[in-house]
Image (cartoon, rainbow, N blue to C red):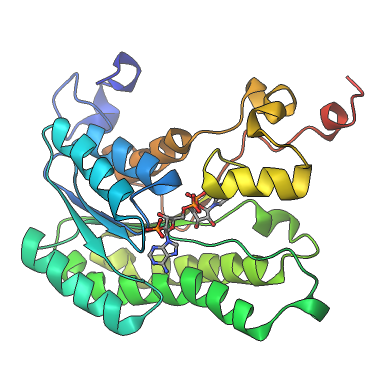
Length: 282
Ligand code: NDP
């Protein structure tokens, strides 16, 4: 455990002096789209801090199995589950299998996502709108509905929605994605109020640009760079955000340190791009 996470004193009276605030030992996490990209970073951080992890994937079984192997190398349990989480029947069958294997889920991370095509509303295919909204919103609703009954029986539960800083700007040519992420945040804030009496914290983590397959595609399409690292010099702190930066935020929210935090949106975007830098004015 990195030394900077070690805390002591009355604020953490429930634990002995020297306890870590990130301890997730004995907790079971489910991460949708956990095989690669940001999901893999989240799985890695939760497992590092002690959680066993159920990893969902849709198509990339190889990546999911690699992620699971990395978790097992840390001495934690990991299982992989194939399902398109935007499909109710598939999500239900998968949750049955997860609950059979692990008994319960304490931490649900709704991370699976797809980008939209970058067209204005006038040119957006209704089928694309349906696909994007189903993947981000219906899937999160399905998984919350499926895991809540057992989560409510545990001492503590955590639900984290992976949204996007796109909900701050709601920029043109992103209606399906903007609408989906805004609705995902609405679901989180509704759930936070409904589930507080059951000891369940519900929060949103909203990344800016992150180096993943989706991030690389976005960087090419929106910023016109072939290599995402061309954006390092104009990025906050001199580098493009990494999946572990999102994973660390999720792990903190689910830890003892995050026990009094619910109904919040945490932007993990380094404060956003500095437009003076991107225009070469500093
Ligand atoms: P990637 O495209 O790199 O990975 C997407 C992940 O989602 C994969 O694991 C994929 O699984 C999974 N997935 C997609 N659709 C489904 C589905 N229907 N059922 C199950 N799994 C699915 O994206 P990122 O890792 O970058 O994105 C993760 C989340 O972070 C998304 O919600 C995205 O909107 C959000 N985000 C990303 C940003 C970025 O810059 N990268 C910025 C802000 C937010 P498989 O490979 O098996 O198909």
